[in-house]
Length: 324
Ligand code: PEP
Ligand code: MG
Image: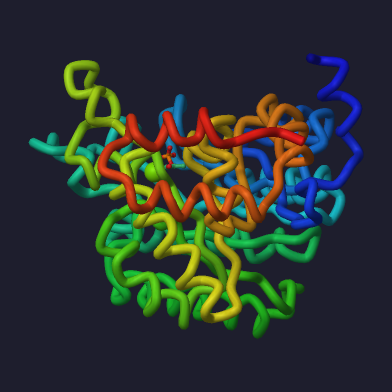
């Protein structure tokens, strides 16, 4: 199998009937880029920047962040790099922030909510990103967006920092795509509105499933409810992809589902443009996609959307997806 995968390392991610998608990688540190390149990644679809802030006792400085972002952009050699702004809170804590204990951390003060409140932290990160933007193909993404108000406020802060930098003579890339994670059901439901204002979506199924099914993604006792193939999730994914396309935008996915070989035919059929996964999943995914017919996958996806249960959907995929 390994030998078969390696054969597609420098091949395009194109289905047997000629539909191209992008296979990207999720990374946590600049050191991870080597693995992305070695596995034929076409982009970084999610750079989880929180690791820069964790395992230490003070905030990373603007300079430290700038170095990390620049390194990733340069080592990707001009390929797209989607950097997600700080997604702290929930399961990821920062001792030096001294935040109050919460009853429901996953429903609490985290990610963009925290960044909009503690703007010094957010603005420092945005400045580091903007300064790094001229060293590659940077795209910026906000996590845990629940309302258009949050997105507009975060975007306004980004534009403010950009103007200040430009006014001070700093080089900033002219075009930086600005997108959002779609990982909260309210945002999936209003995707048509968000698509008018964001440049792209990346569906965060890890959280989207947890919030849609009301089942903690870390709790074994309710893990039976954690169902990527539940038609409710599939309909939400379809809604988000269709909304992006209606506005001429692209839709990706950076949750675990994007690298799942059973899910990939469905996602291809639903029209997903970018699949972001752990680097080691890229070659198996590309090997599969090159054998699939997009047209057949569309037909299967349409049937899946009309099924009752996750089990029905998995059975459908297993009986109907044939690789060419
Ligand atoms: C997600 O929620 O799907 C996601 C990619 O983000 P994280 O796993 O970092 O919450
Ligand atoms: Mg998430």
